[in-house]
Length: 69
Image 1: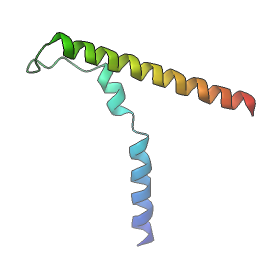
Image 2 (image 1 turned 120 degrees about the vertical axis):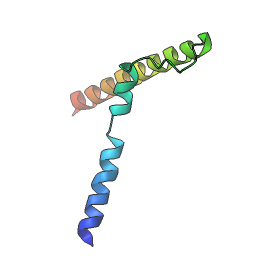
Image 3 (image 1 turned 90 degrees about the horizontal axis):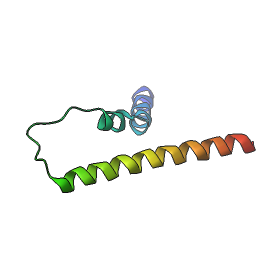
Image 4 (image 1 turned 60 degrees about the vertical axis):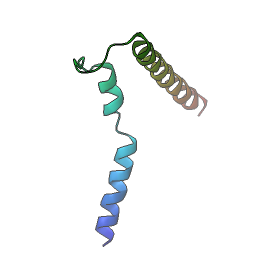
């Protein structure tokens, strides 16, 4: 019983640190069935910029934390 609980906790922890979706967002192929619209292109561009800024900020916060300790 306890073994199943440990496996479930490991699954949940792995789920939070799975960056596969983020990385594939930048390097996926174009879907021909998806409609092309200027608004959608701008939205995806802004999403990519915000994700990059977030990752840079996380790296800066981690490095500042490491430098202070």
